[in-house]
Amino acid sequence: MTKAEFLSKQKEAEYAIREKGKFIPWLSLMITIAMVAGIGMLAGFFRWTVYNGDPAYGLLWEIAFCLLVLCITSYEHRYSGQKTVALLKKLGLTCPICDRSSIFDNGKITAKTGQCSHCDHSFFDPAS
Ligand SMILES: [Zn+2]
Image (cartoon, rainbow, N blue to C red; front, side, top):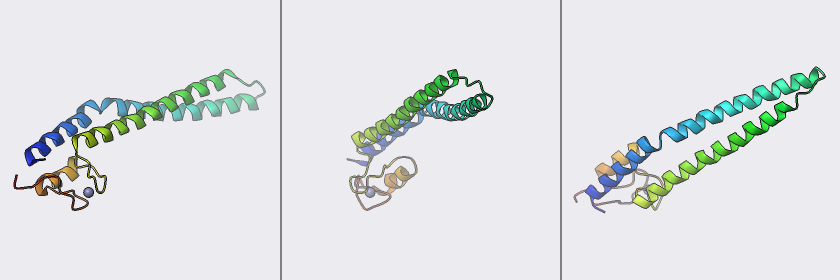
C-alpha cells in the first residue's frame, strides 16, 4: 500500500465512522439508559404495589418489555461495533501484529511514519 492509498482509506473509514455511524449508536445508548431507568422505576413501583396488598401485575409486562428493548439495543450496539471492526479490517487499517486500528489519533502517527503507532509493523513506505 502506498501512502496516498493509506490516507484515502483512512479518510473513508473516518468518514464512515463519524458521519454514518454516529446516529444509531447514540440512539441505542440513549434508549438503553432510558430502559435501565424505566426498569428500576417500574420494579420499585411494583414492589410498592405488592407492599400495599394490591399487586399490579401489568407492571411485570412493562418490565419484560423494557428488558426486551434493552436486549435489542445491546445487540444493536454490539453489532455496530463489529461492523466498524470489519470495515477497518477490510480496508487494511488494522495492524496484523497488534490488532489496533490506525485511524483518528493513532492514524495521524501512522500517516506520518508509515508504521503502526503501537508496534513496528509497517503499513507503507513513508517515502512513497
Ligand atoms: Zn501494531
